[in-house]
Image (cartoon, rainbow, N blue to C red; front, side):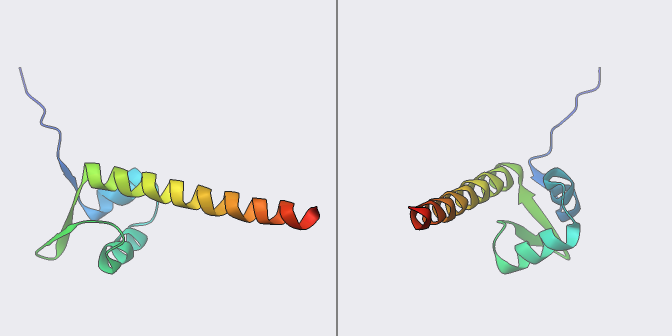
Length: 78
């Protein structure tokens, strides 16, 4: 019986696939420090748990911004 070991980290390309975005955008965000990752040689190692936390936090932050903008528009109508 063969045992499958689930990787703990993604490469930048794998992270892009998981986020359903382009690898160049992931690399840019890694370089800026927006996505947490560890540089190893010429590549990156991105912990799966931190990538998930990053996208969850981004979604929450953007939702709050949209809610705030919506409330501001509603206040102007009144």
